[in-house]
Image 1 (tube, rainbow, N blue to C red):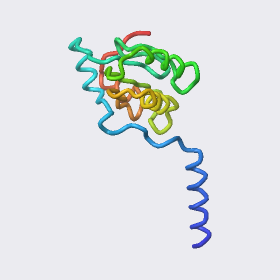
Image 2 (image 1 turned 120 degrees about the vertical axis):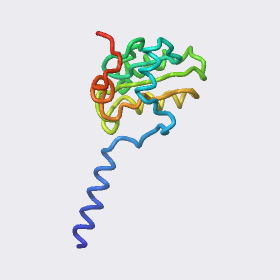
Image 3 (image 1 turned 30 degrees about the horizontal axis):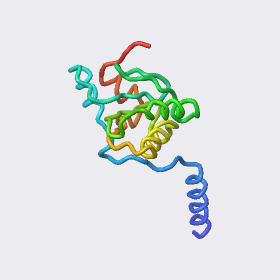
Length: 142
């Protein structure tokens, strides 16, 4: 029994050392995909929508690039530099589940660091296909 407990502790330490940082957004900062799709369809998008992943597939969104790498993070930082801190911003990736995504945490952390107050993460917990495309929300061709 003691050996099993020790193995569980060791496994937990190894896993937590390799796991990504915990979620750095609140549930209130998750924007439901249906809400953004409704705004797009009504042509009443009241936010700057930024793709911080591999491609900008949402109509009207701006392609920043992968926020998890230096080039993408630098581009995001440059984009945010001239914006009012209260500007409504929605970021999204959708390359993979949140638990594995290399882009959402750095983007949200940068928004926090730069003291933005009105930002959201598009709620795509699985990936862009499952949480957006399969629901027939609007997309643009690349």
